[in-house]
Image (tube, rainbow, N blue to C red; front, top):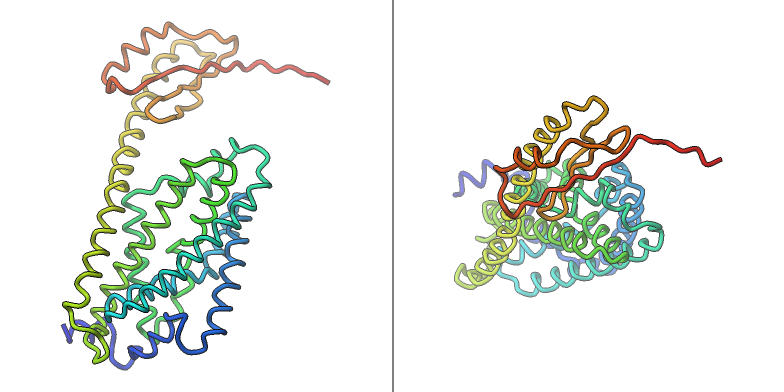
Length: 331
């Protein structure tokens, strides 16, 4: 283990336990300075994130990611688990919870600028954060590992902005606030689950890296038996997060596959009518709507389409929505 630790984190570049503790613990060292900086940057990142989400601006949201300070107390939880300091775990958790409340509240306040809640369904900053899957968890684990390494090594501080962009903690909470503010609770819960999965992944990755770095063997660390309960709790949290993410991944894959089948069948169905075309297939739950555009509103016999879709599961509903190309000048 020592050789592996030295290879991953050379002794000359490794932060001491006291240095890492001072970096990640908002209750150690210059407490006033650290806490004020945390709150100021958190509020600013929340405002930027909410504005970027509502403006559907990727560049603005990235700006919020870069300055968001939430990763510090989350990695503080990981360090507290590794060294067996319950006080550090609890204090860091409280700062994370405070951050969640502040960011969600700011997002909810920005919801007053939403004139049409239904327009949020086409906002890429929202739709990309309301249906997390296993790929999101894998990315969060890799990013958390990178972040913990960067925190442990003196020579990797330059990668921290990239890690901040990749881990995405504040934007999902901004989406939670905006969606909750307009009553879109399903979307809000999806974004909240993305945030929770990122937090759990960051704690797991941080715990592994800090253990490999040798912080668990520091004289100030508690015996392994005293830390076992914390590891069990983190493991249970990981399982709780993974199950719905796995389910969501399977459902997303199935809907994509069925959507392609429906689209291909619909295109063959309208193929005999040169004036008709398939504009798209939209899902609401397990019910698919085929958007067909025609000149006069007429469509082929739907019985032919139903026959072509016999291979779909019985619980999948399919309907056709017809749009015409008619245009009327009103003034």
